[in-house]
Length: 341
Image (cartoon, rainbow, N blue to C red; front, side, top):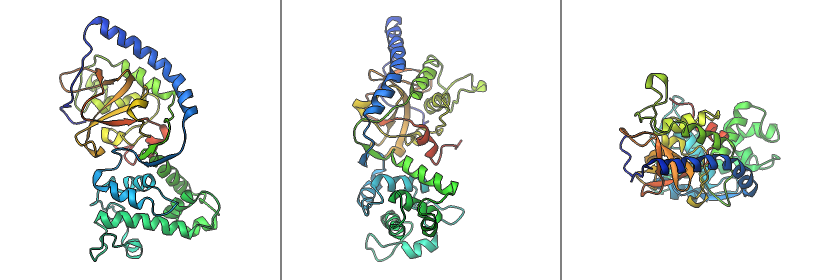
């Protein structure tokens, strides 16, 4: 992650203070198992709207507006598709000649692209045309397969991946692993863009991730550190969070702003131990995230702060706190950069 985390640091100094906080962490790690059951039971399962800061500010209005174009899509689902396709890059171009933020191939764009901003041309490279066109295309696909049994959104996504004919042929999502994985990936990824209604469910894996990070307290920071033997077991901020969750077989991306979408986003007053907490230069743009830590409760995180420091406890309340992510295994697998170096 980037060097020079510019938030106020609060180092827990003195044997008594550190000892008390370590005891607190021990209790929180044990308590997380109970929270996993209790919170999961209270979770609502229904989410609406976009989570704060989930979509870059430049595109939030477009996604919110056009994500409500038809019942088969939502702002969060549209955001998940765009993030999966291009990572919000309006200049993206794939080897297959898919173009722009929504990754239309020329033939599909010619048929389904629209001039949404009314400037006299439909431009695949202009998000003001491409994002509405993606929503419009989704809704067209939903109409094509509206008579197929099953979930309308899943059938629409299957049609996007395999073609409407296959959805109609198989009376729903066809038995192709690629298509089934695509449907699961987008619907799972959408949860990281939703504004939760009710409390967000947790898991027992979070407690083990904290336990791993706690074992690294006092380790010197290393820019680009992954904790390998040749690096003397040292980490930077996202290297530590990646390793902590890798210890429970959840593979996070290497970079903090990619880890942001590994699950839903609990509110500040709903944080529980194991949540990843993030800090950004622009609180309206998650692409500017520059730091991440693991929440341990009581307003504190374990983190690898910066060069010259050690892995330690710091307070999370700071002007550049953008939010938190409750990591899930499916959420991590859904990330387009999950296996990137």
